Image 1 (cartoon, rainbow, N blue to C red):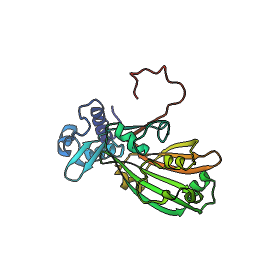
Image 2: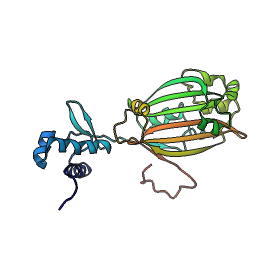
Image 3: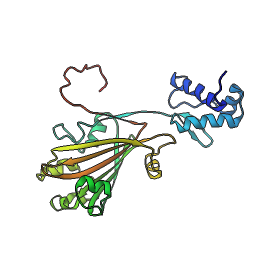
Image 4: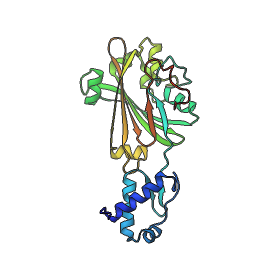
Length: 257
């Protein structure tokens, strides 16, 4: 005898049907009344089961439109090549990677002089609250919110690279711009974590209930000190990262790239 609450039985049955392709991504689930008849359960029980799938990120709900199976058109980012000047780029790394994947990039910018938060000051080795340039990007892939990127540069760097304060995009990318001034990023330290989004992150990235964000913090270094700290916040359901480390000549061409 199944001792699970009825709403969980409903959710489990629908989850199996989503997994096996009975309801593919983008398809609509039967109405609450149809599911009520199928499972011999009240509308409230059906609604609770559907809401459980919503919190798990498997379906989304729209007022008057019912429940739809979530689409997961994942974008894969090669974090080893991102911003690596040895690889050819037609602009900044984001635009190049998205375009090369056959997708359409779009981003908006905000630039401001702001006190460095504690986690940024620690990574940039400056005093907490000291001024830093924040370049904030809201990025899209095919008009779908993809990520936000907040890059902090220490104030001392602005004297040598004044274009960092420009409100628009730096066409060649900030890493190439700084390298052209003799401020070369020779290494970086990455930190990767996951958590549930803040209300502001959920709004900017249009994240549904139950979907986490992936946080990628990259601190870039010149020969003698850190020169920037970048925090990229990704939608957890639409992104995947990979790294290439060492000699991969034995890797099969048929493996996922």
